[in-house]
Image 1 (cartoon, rainbow, N blue to C red):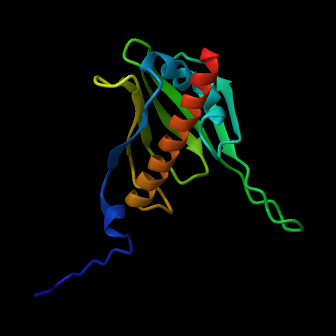
Image 2: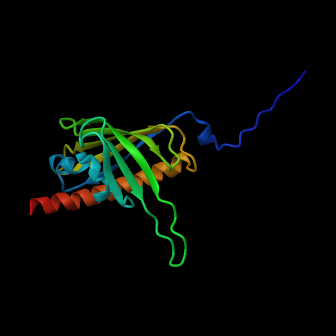
Image 3: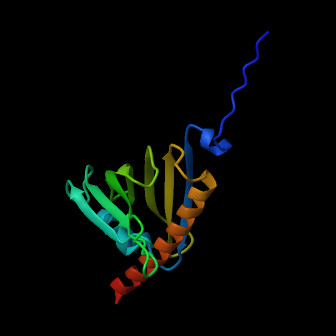
Length: 175
């Protein structure tokens, strides 16, 4: 009898065919109708997502399915050191639903380790409060260099930062 043993060098979460999950953040004093226009501005991500230095339309019409944005962060090296390589991605808008306050996009290129990645971001009104929530759902192949928990932690931090910046911008809009 012959026994074959196959060892995997991947962590257990890397062996899964797909990762999915959701993170959310509360905007306690911003109604959904006031928050949505900020999130719906597909090519304005750099205004709301910390660490994104550039967000530019590279194809299609902003706000229409098929629009592709280039997003990048440019890490600065220490003085006297070589500048580190920018992290970038091309993201395609798949759906923008104003009535449902929801947009979906896919990463279609870049150097951040993503294979297939699709996200849906929704602004949901709170039923018992004046505020709203941003919900960021994702499904993707395992991401090179990340654990699933690491990705969820990054997205959780990101959505909370976005919520704070959107709430600040919505408050300024009221003035």
